[in-house]
Length: 286
Ligand code: GLU
Image 1 (tube, protein in one colour):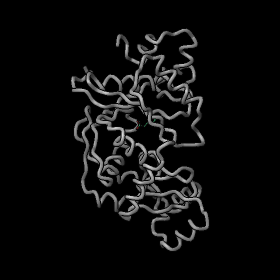
Image 2: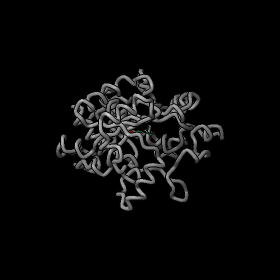
Image 3: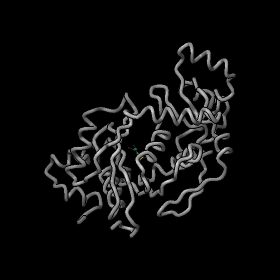
Image 4: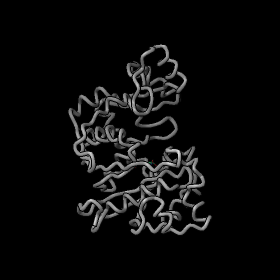
């Protein structure tokens, strides 16, 4: 039975293989599995769109560590790097709606532009992109692309939000949440180095995998505003959400990959049992 008494759901754990899993991941994975509940399904997804940071040895460690912890997921792990076509199709659809534009800015140029303007609003991911490339004439943008200039693809947020109209989602803990994707500004849909970005890939995957309840840390709650918008634009059903607390270390700092001593692997190597590690993550006796 799911902890909060809801019927079975389809949940997922979606780690990126950019380091060893730590106690915070153990908590997140166990949380997702527990909310699948009786009659539910628990799926695994490998978020490996970042070719520069993902490593096969970390992916292997994910399977090993989760299995050791006693987690069991359904066959058919979805690896994002194998599904670039799905993201490209979604991108094409948004482009067809006139909501996507190429952005040639480097990080340094964006920083300089923000400094010049003196008043860049801050979004959940830092300063909001000032929109430098939004108004580029189409012919100029096409010429630069044809010349091989590196570019990302951004969502024209104001137009996208206007096209979608008011949106909301249901969070199992927080209740009805009104979507305010505008706070992010023109988010990146496809990065310069890889043909998708986090927001697009996650939104498309959650639908393709049939996820009915997205569980993840509350650090990702702001991202749900963007995901809800993308769902509306792409005509995708909206799952329920549940954003959980983040585990912290003794000084109250949230666990991160720098906490090597709290990696599941190092706890195991120091002789902790799986049961002890589950208890450390707050899932004792389950
Ligand atoms: N891959 C993300 C992470 O490791 C999680 C994405 C999600 O759950 O939406 O933080």
